[in-house]
Amino acid sequence: MTIGSSLVWGQCDTWTSSTIRNCNGIDYELWNQNNSGKVNMKITGGSTNTNGGTFQATWQGTENVLFRAGKKWGASSQSTPKSIGNITLDFVATWNSSDNVKMLGVYGWAYYPSGSEPKNRENGQSLNFSNQIEYYIIQDRGSYNPVSGGKMYGEATIDNIQYEFWVNDRIGQPMLTGNGNFKQYFSVPKNTSSHRQSGKISVSKHFEGWDKVGMKMMDCRLYEVAMKVESYTGSAKNSNGSANVTKNLLTLGGTPVLPDHKVITTSSTPLVSLTGKTLNVSPVDGAKLQVRVVDIKGKVRAVFNAAEASAFSLSNIPTGWYLVDATGAGVKQFTPVVLK
Image (cartoon, rainbow, N blue to C red):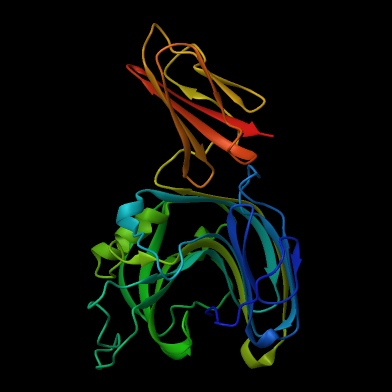
């Protein structure tokens, strides 16, 4: 239930083997253990898609297969949950799989700070672990509970779902850098009736909850945050299934994402409008405005200041969906725009 080190860079269309690539601003990955059976991952989204990192997947006769899309900071990451701020993921997915070891939810890897790598197994036995953490925030799963054999650290209610927090030991198993010993973190709904295939996931609240019960996370460097579909049968190689992730909006740093294109405002007068790739700014009553153009992943692409009606060119910004944040004395307005 981990990614491997054998990855092939591919194209942003349909993949039939293990592939990792940034497609239209979204980091996608397909991992098929030992290239067993047949797999297919069709990339249907990107930062130009108001539904984010969407994809379709099918698999047949596989051992362990993972399909995911989100944000990868990579091995050199200096970004931590604490430094990023609020992280949420809004998703809609339909899926089915013939096996019972299957999971849908938020997935990723992180790194313990230097010098704080675990020195013991969860049963107290002495054993050195790597600095790598594999983590899961499960939204839906099969009858097999992946935390079996692990240790429960606590529980919390997040997004109106009661979750249990667990840690598992993985010994000599595939991780980001070959095989080794590492910890797995899990948030698992306490009741199977809480399983879901759509909704908003407050990722940061899970990270904070883990940290509070002794599962160190807030100062850990993040390798990635992604929405993932996984199916596992091991050597039986008889897993078959399909998935369609039709919404996968990841928000980093708390920047609002408004896929329904509604304007949120404290002013009755529109402060900005778009003509082609020209942004028109109209301050109210002479109040100076700071205007930020933010992409779907929370990255600020441009900043302008205006004390009077002004026009700013956005020709150096790629096509796609953006949020324009206009802020001034007593006014604030978020306006979704699409650059074509």
